[in-house]
Length: 110
Length: 115
Image 1 (cartoon, each protein chain N blue to C red):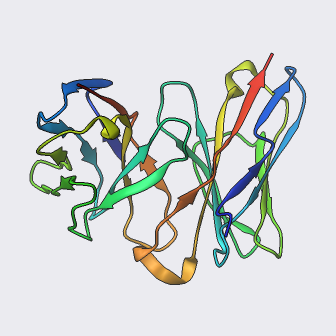
Image 2 (image 1 turned 120 degrees about the horizontal axis):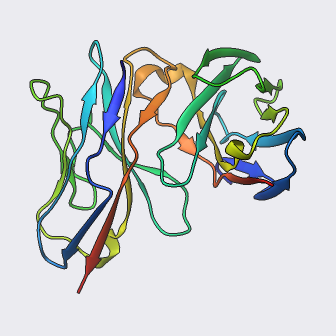
Image 3 (image 1 turned 30 degrees about the vertical axis):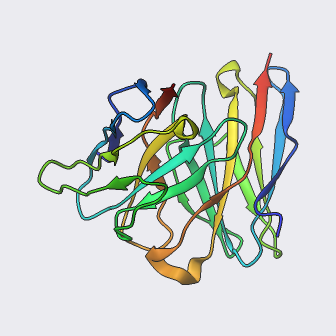
């Protein structure tokens, strides 16, 4: 079965602390993995994808096929990082649908 | 470019009624997908339209149907509404031609409340 699991509903950290939002997936094949973010009163938007291997707003995520994980990390959290984060996967064929996890709320306080 | 636009933003319906939600994709996008996001859950895929045909469908009953128009805009119809259909309905658009390296852009959503 295709599934994305985000074990934490809420992650609270202090400003400047490291952040790791966990994501595990189940998929038969080689999926694309994504992190989407939703800031307060804004629409869902793409944060980063594993094929880009880039850092966005200081966030990185590495695909670990052995552990079927795609954890999102940032060394020093900022208050503006507070948002809802969704991990998602998509099959490697054009046009296939996104499968989302339930999301993790990140709260960064000073 | 206004991006993906959805209407209405909020809607209240009674059990048993029917509802139609609308989506205009981002300029240059020809593929539209619909998602249901219940409270506290991640978005769940309903179906996807491309070239005016339903191309892929998630695990939703036939009460959920859709349509895509020649201008790529789309409608989501839900018949015989149940209380459990109360959710945020998201529309996402993407360009088919980009293959797997395409990004899906989401609308703000329509908040449907069934009473």
